[in-house]
Length: 351
Picture 1: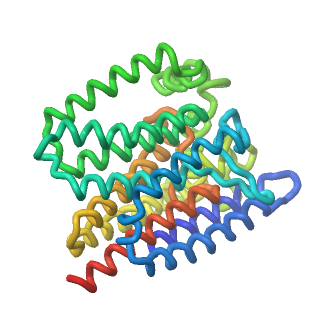
Picture 2: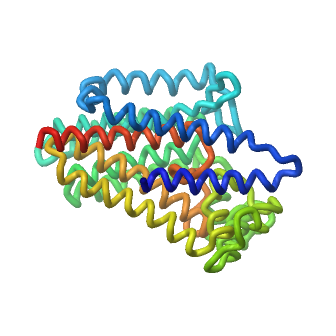
């Protein structure tokens, strides 16, 4: 129910953003309804599938993920400078969204079959290399935001696996060195500018800092009760870019106010709480690792998106799970929920 209510919040705000267009077009709204209904059908379908099948097929799924990401460079379509999309009949398909699920399955199986107390450095390196292949392929698209999510998903699984502080410190040092190398030789100028703008949004408020500035204005303008659906000046007058995608949280804050924000965050909190409660009933390591990884992934995406909207994190193009416009994102998120349901249901049966 929490997930369903988040989807409804997203549909309402996507409809509101559509009202701002000079010629009313509800195409995106209708597409999102289709993907939401299709995603809910997938949620129930995956909940009926025995999750042990995913564990058995994890190696094949991993190879499939690599093939799909490589296929993007040959058959993919570039959108906003990123070659990370397949198009079929007018619908865009972003494979990295589904690769996230594959990575969680791969890591859940790996850590469920390995004891990190025995040769922990080996397990840290092998799991990291397995994740690194996906991350590098996504970086070459280039899609920095999705690559970051894959990296953080691996880190979340590492934390769940129980590595000691010494090995976590090694990971932190490696990541800092990799960041320094990437800053000097890999990051594009616009990516560097986003980080600089995050540190000082007022540095270039009409160019690089425009998105963050407008989002903060929208969030603050909503007050306690909001301006009402379709009456947000920042979103309706198109001051706020990507209003239905990256900055939909700012639209919610402006039009529904603090009360709307509290509701959205409460629904997320209920979902994460139910995941943690469900883990207590799971009687195998694979299921526990997958639920922790899936909940961690969705929490990371939620945290980064909200952080972007209120100016405490740089803009990296991460959507708000279940809420933002985007077919691939909502389908993959609902598939995750379906697999979580499958794990909890079968653990209750076998408890």
